[in-house]
Image (cartoon, rainbow, N blue to C red; front, top):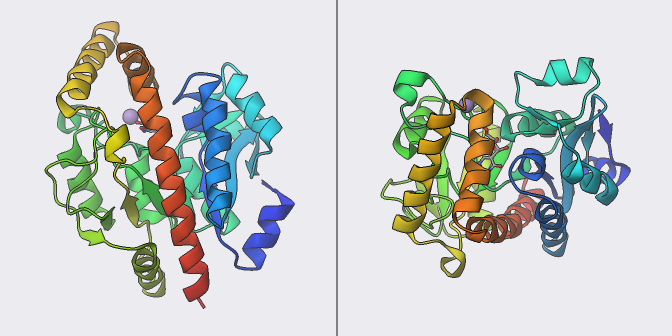
Length: 301
Ligand code: PSU
Ligand code: MN
């Protein structure tokens, strides 16, 4: 594993560091918006007092803190593998390029000693998961790996109720920022209650501290609602999501290809509107993530 020297030093000195994933770059958005977004997210994290560490795998070596050139190469390159926990040993041993999902990014961030990780949306229990068993490896990772994840909630391509049940089983506290309800990625809210409505970054840092002091392994899932002005209309986006899922089923797309297919299909069905919302919400999450990491570095002792 290669840790960028600036990040290594910051970790050693207990300064705030925020991890970022790379599946969002290679499988979550089209080029060149993916690269622009990844660099803009890093900028927001720095502006809010933390150091960004974008994580990806190049020639089998996990990189903690990719350079802007590496991010550009990543965003352009075709055929980068989507890597979750299952895929990690294969990609390392066969010396391939790999884009880390939420699960693999959590594993590598924890190994590097990074507590906070900002992304757009997490994977979850897919619709009909009770028949298909299609539950993202992200959820099990959240149950056991000690990294706090800041996102805009699970997307409505998933079954949000099943996702929340699964997180409860795995002991993952789900916190919404300034809301009683679970944010649903493109829309700021759903009708599902969260475990806690947090009013400040400091309050969230204190919850993370308590979780670590009690050795309650796993994540704290922080869900930051997309700002109203960038949100999509709920009925509109859910209708487009239904169309994308129908097309996925007709084409027989399964397994790890489902989420990337749906993400790109939704971008084309909405003429790029979903992509704009996606970028805005990540930038919003980056600000909160950097603030929480900064508060945490003051109190962790
Ligand atoms: N949800 C999004 N955008 C994404 C992903 C999920 O809104 O880019 C990516 C993340 O990397 C996540 C992965 O970890 O998809 C989940 O894939 P799967 O559903 O195959 O577990
Ligand atoms: Mn899956």
